[in-house]
Length: 532
Length: 51
Image (cartoon, rainbow over all chains, first blue to last red; front, side, top):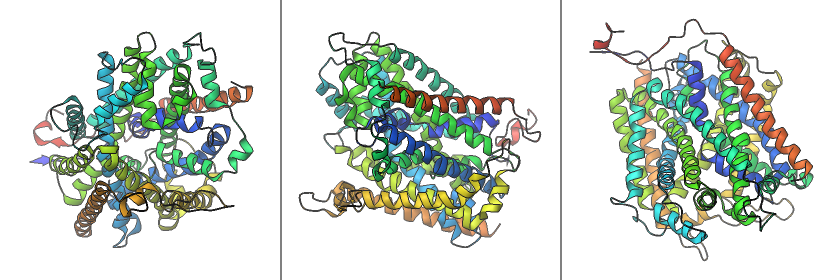
């Protein structure tokens, strides 16, 4: 016979580390620097919009999610469907939490694949196999081979890329099986300080690079920092909707708000555990890693070795094509490269673990499974999803389809829902009081107004802009608006010169099946909860 | 790098670093919750005596 006590955190710092670990990911070190350095929509205007978005969207939703999560936990629920069932108290309430289950699990389908690239690159870098000379094409080819970019099924087999994927996939489930404090908290308590220590070593290395090639004195770290941080035309930038969209999106994605993770993590707190200072600290940790570390390492290093053109290739290109080339050009580059990809791997695994816990929580409390059963079922579901992403690797079509519909649209939708539920189902006043139970810090009163009015309005506007731009293909111009269907839409329905993609359609169909299956499980869970 | 760029960098990096350090100090020196269990995990029946 087993006597079960509820799973929980062993310390306040532990839950903060876990939430920070969930938030700090690849975007902190690869996406954010690229956005700041963008000549059209970056610079000072982006940073101003970024910090304003942090104050009126990031922090408020973070506090809302922590508060609703802890409240749900006191009602005996740890998953989004359960927590919304407890808050809304209507038969349809639990279905509002559907996204809080399918988003983290769906994102895991591809995130763990990218995580395995990071581990593989770390291994190859330490072993010297990533030192491929000075030809940029060699690095692009190596990335293409490692990820199976050129043909579907290219990495399936006993080759290193597939073995790294299987190893990382299994490692995640071994850790999650150990439970909240022995698994996730243990890894984050060691992983986050290690990540910051590695980042500081890399920061010192980058800032002391000077001018790597004396024959090209304009290619220096100092000019690289200038390329990234010089403010450009701030007034023009702030009047550009694209700047606000990019800044708000980055805040949204980097903090993991609307993901279904924070609400689950916070549900394991006790009624009088603080959520205000904890939420602020986790947010501050993420911002420190993003602005204070990520903002000073990747772009300046890439600029100093390869110039401005190398920086403008997007997240994957910067991380897996440009930076290996940069490390190959510096003394002991294989060590620094290995450290960099180890940093990315730690950032990724602390995030991927957080994507599994909402699923585990739901399967345990919704279907009454024990940990072994819930880990097995979630393992099966994610194995199917991951296989789809790993097999259909040509052009990373399956990966980008899941990323767009689940990782972009889904997260925005869930975050917007969350702030409305807090204000109109839970009640702003009640939520404000609930947030301050056991709080180590008072939230400034102005945030009550922001949470009630500004965040919902701003988030709705940004969400609409996001959909108009990425689904309807709006050119973000008010003067001469034009709508051109975007790739994710054309992949599904086809268009002139852009035939529909079978892989994209299959992936979308699989996501619909997954959503329907999840809704059925929630229906079944509801019966169980009603019978309580 | 221009002076404005240097200012943007120092203010941005300085602000997030200060906030992070302040929060960490506040968490590490803050009050302890008296009813917080030291460790909560599912307990197997055979482990009860040992615990």
